[in-house]
Length: 284
Image (cartoon, rainbow, N blue to C red; front, side, top):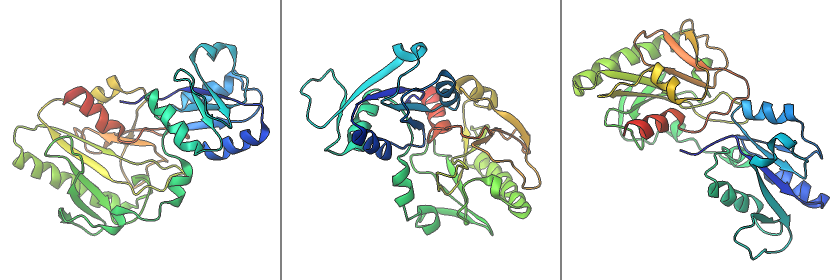
């Protein structure tokens, strides 16, 4: 699994380079700074939200200098494997993405790429493996499933989170979940443990069509398991009246179907496929 909370420091005295870098290096899982000084409080705020810092010509606070990944911004090629650099005359984001990959970092999606994305596969509903079609949702098999029992519940409406559902949609979703639990138990009788989560984020920078993952598993994985492996604080909420608050991660082990757990801290970065990767890494 990739890691978050990195500190990238890009050095250049050229103001034109600074403007180019600031425009290109905007990511959902990072905050880009261009001021000459970066305070402790700003760094801590970014890290607390599980994001990385991209500091362009900023003076990094001394408390963090030992953890900084230095990058040089130039207008020529540097023939040295041990130096991380960006040639601003070439594709800036591609070069930076290679550096990010080198350190196994997760800084999310490039904001411009999300804004330019026009098609939504869930809206197009091109999946031929639809198992069930309801009034507000359909059920299909998950791509890259963790286990054979891995299904998706997808709303027809292009919404970013189930927190945006109305009362009728909330009750329909719970009815579908109850039916799927029975179906999965009959199909996979040895899988006694259920888990469901939302693969989405209600974030104004993202335009994601939310979907709910539901799996039945032969091994134990519940909310307490998620808490052991997760670095996020999961707050308990009762799922009723279609009135979830703004949410960034929603999950339930379905022991009590109306009890759900979520991270609802504004600005929190939740990596893509976060729960799926936790389950896969620790149980596959």
